[in-house]
Image (cartoon, rainbow, N blue to C red; front, side):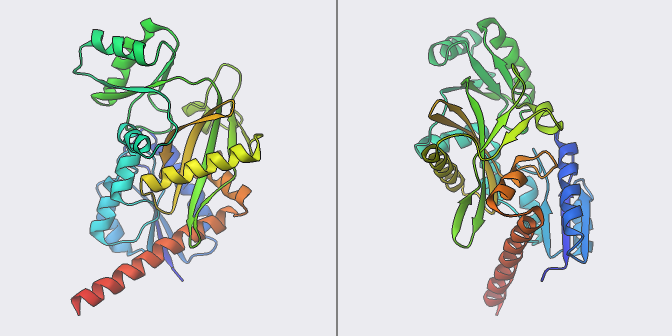
Length: 322
């Protein structure tokens, strides 16, 4: 039985406050069953603080870079601590929407049409390519942000260039996707001993003429989560199967959440989140409840998997050194 759990949250990310809320929810649930649970702010003192605390398992409640893009995972690998969630490579790939989309494409998963915008490309040529490939209804996304930060929805050609310039503030490359008008759908995924399990499909409904942006994600009452989504069983199973394939394609571990847009009976994979939110308005814990796992049970499952990985790694190292 593990005794000492460290929770990582906060940091310099634009999603730091959401991360702290996730961390607090996790800490509250775990403190009732584990003797030592401590939340650590992600900063330059994190490594020595963790070494002093000597946790049995680390639970990263982190959103956005550097906590979700493989940077923190690399630090934890170097420190030798077992941790919940995907490893360095999968975290980095999932956080890079452009690279992840290329992998999804190779896996044959259903995607929206897209163009990769490069700040160094001639603007006239780029706008011409966007128009011929996608049209005027587009969605502009910085590739390395989460929680819909920096995302702009556009329906007029003259708005594309200024939106691209705003997105370039996050980096020199930007993902430009076809804007699909449809229903927002999400599926949580959980690794188990019996394989990857998909939670019930959830539909996210926001007020008319709005979408599931940062404000609607984290403000209570601004979105309605319908679980299970009111779609046919066959469609639900197909979306769940697609989510599992996406999880496998990126090599995700322990948990993830796949987001989709549904247009009629046609669905499009948007992205995979390797560290989904654990706040009071978060979709992943809701999906787990619909699957039959209460929040404390879900956390126990994730911690146990990480703890056992740590034991296996220690045994292998002992054998190598003997």
